[in-house]
Amino acid sequence: MEKQKKFVDELDKKKKDKKKITIYVIIFMAVLAAFFGGFFGAPYIGVLLNQPINMVRVLFYLAFTVFICYCAAIFHVVLHEAGHLIFGLITGYQFISFRIFSYIWIKEEGKITRKRFSLAGTGGQCIMSPPPLKEGKIPYLWYNLGGVLANVFVSLLLMFFYYYFKPRGFWGEVLLLTFMVGFILALLNGIPLNNGELLNDGYNIVAIGRSSMSMYAFWLQLKIMEEMAKKKRLKDLPKDWFISLKEEEMNNVMVTTISVFACNRLLDLKEMEQTKEKIEYLLGANIKMAGIHKILLKIDLLYLTLIFSHNQEEISRIYTKELKKYMKQLHSLLPVMRTEYAYALLIDKDLQKAEKMKERFEKAASKYPYPQEVLGERELMEEAEALYHKREE
Image 1: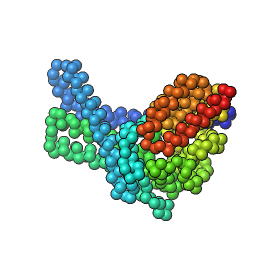
Image 2 (image 1 turned 45 degrees about the vertical axis):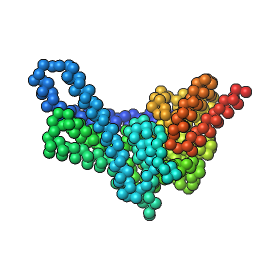
Image 3 (image 1 turned 90 degrees about the vertical axis):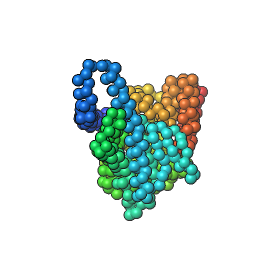
Image 4 (image 1 turned 120 degrees about the vertical axis):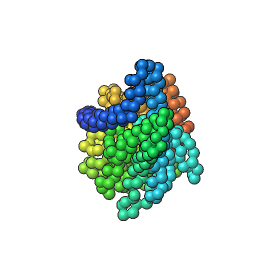
């Protein structure tokens, strides 16, 4: 009990530090947005001030601006992921999957199929199979930087068109707003940033370049995704891929992913107690870890605690308001549905609620891009169901 309280307190302290960084970034982006808004909006404000104020005109202009920015954002997200794809192919990577919002195109048995998958806080993702390690190294800079370069190149091209052709009215504003959105997106992805939940491209580049172990961790992440696209489960992958790390070695977010995947593999092997111990160690240790990995480990820890314990106080220490908020944001992920199903059965003892969770799970599973992951999560749900019936006997 004391051990769990310790790592929960440590997590709270680390979250406060991450929030400070996020606040600084938000302030910077607000100042940048104000600059662009003033620079590009001044001519229109001047026009409005020389005329009687017409609220309908003002609201129409604002709605039009928001709509164009929304369309520009979609355009630049597609462009960003295409940049990763192009530079990846140039430097020896091979296509695995390409996701835009909740639509993902994935290569399966030589064919590309469209499925559904989303991750809160991300607009898209391009996953590629890495080239073989040579002397512990693979090319990583251009693949990670490709998205930012694509946004910057096209944004500069738009500005060239604007100043060279000097379009007015609709097309002039489209060019300016699309440039602005692309430039801001390039900054958000290019300036190294760990916002406490997700890492951006700039941060990944810095993290990978720090050591040979970081390089291996980056290769391993992509290699695992490659094997998953071939319908292999984590438990089927070579054990020696998942190197055992000491606490002092996990001072790099990229390196820590090796231990995160090791936990995932143990859970797939149904080594429940060992998984729980390893997760508690990672969450309580003085290490650097991506926020999304920390959240997913806490979700797994909640599931395992439900399996091993009746103690409501112990469960409540993990199932905090913040974790509930994250689980709501990540509601489309299978581990979240599996854990909510176990909670409905083992704590709420609500069979109707559990059945609805199972229906949600199966609906999501039918479109999920990784069928072998569905099998593993379904087995964990069956473990919870069997335990429920055993406790009710």
